[in-house]
Length: 288
Image 1 (cartoon, one colour):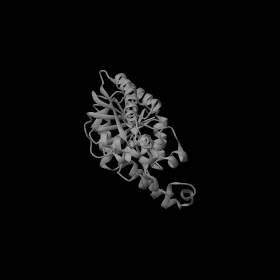
Image 2: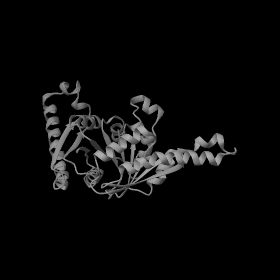
Image 3: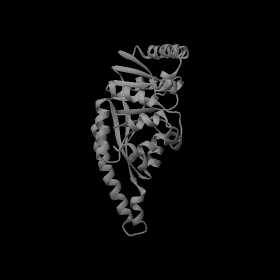
Image 4: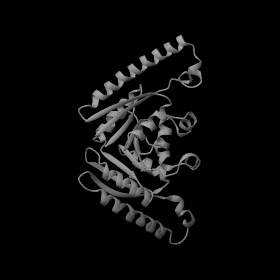
């Protein structure tokens, strides 16, 4: 398994690294640090600098690169006994762009990023690195929150056959290092029942919708059951984000899938998966 981990100066990077090697057995792990030098390192300002100031700028940048290199070596040392190959990428540039480029060039199966806990609006307004990577990464993304934790219970939120198949394929192809308890959750939206409330047969509608949803999640759970997972299917009724967040409050990790929208279309119409990244307190694995 090929994994890219975004690393910076914060303790969150160490937590993200430790959590991913606790979850998986990477064959190759690439630590990526992007240095945002600013406009001085870009055209046309850099060529306009006098020779002496520019040389001093280059020396200062090299000192920073050396310092970052030592930091990444320390992070690599923490996991060297668990990972056969640990590589380092240090580049000056926009952090999100550097991380995404490394993810593509290494053909990563998973990119791991820390999250500062900003609100969804704040992340969009400030151009959060985790926000941008989550939107544009070509592979699955693990968003790690808070201190490292040992994962034992995982909620797998599925909306329909397409995203359920993507998640099932991912979980079977990339099993966790240790056996996990999985809860395959489908939420029947409460708005579905609104036209029928107060009418005769309302209870029958509720029972029929719940039974249909249960017949949807049970085969998924059965397909996942085996040496790596102990899976059960569960159905809830209510607002999708609310009910998933409530269930995740009892677990260590949430697994969701994106709906495939890109760019402006995704931002305008929103995403339950993206909303849940901000709603839940624990880590979130977003599968594509």
